[in-house]
Length: 231
Image 1 (cartoon, one colour):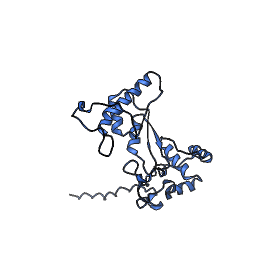
Image 2: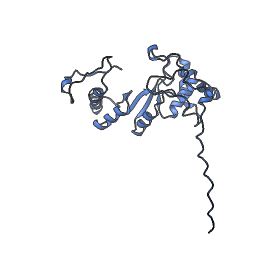
Image 3: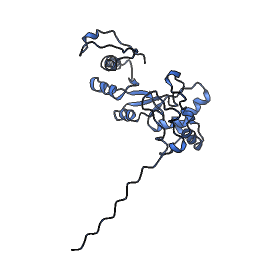
Image 4: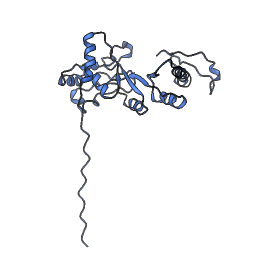
């Protein structure tokens, strides 16, 4: 993502000179955390202290980056906006944010099938067409999009689906009234991606039978106690 920073003399950085970006143009993560993000965040803190902004937050921040802010700055982010949907659930990050009273906002809650082709796997699944999602939608007489929005709301995350269609806008708002049963809320069976922005291939996407919630195995029965021999 684009970000702004003031030009610096990198030779003065602790540990010696290091490139601001790698050969492909990707920003150096260590310098981003210790330089640009922290300095930008402190500037936002000053704006908040001056009453020029009400709340300040971040987007696409990891647990490590938020920890840096909490440790070295004064204000905890009010929100962290990240991509969230059943294929990219990011449960540890969501839990970390909630534990630190940080609101999580989910963008692309209906999946990110509209992103550029060079960011997609070949024949990758479309979340709105996932058999599990469609089955749940049919049971509730709802659309797949409404199920996905309701699922996100059940996780105590804010949702920002994108649409310019008046009918779909109305459906999106109505999703707040859709109640999913506890067994369906986690959608644990859907294969979540290991890295942000990468969805599983169609071959990895489970079918309805594979995705159905499975009860945890029962603990093995204890062997009968041996009777003590009489003396």
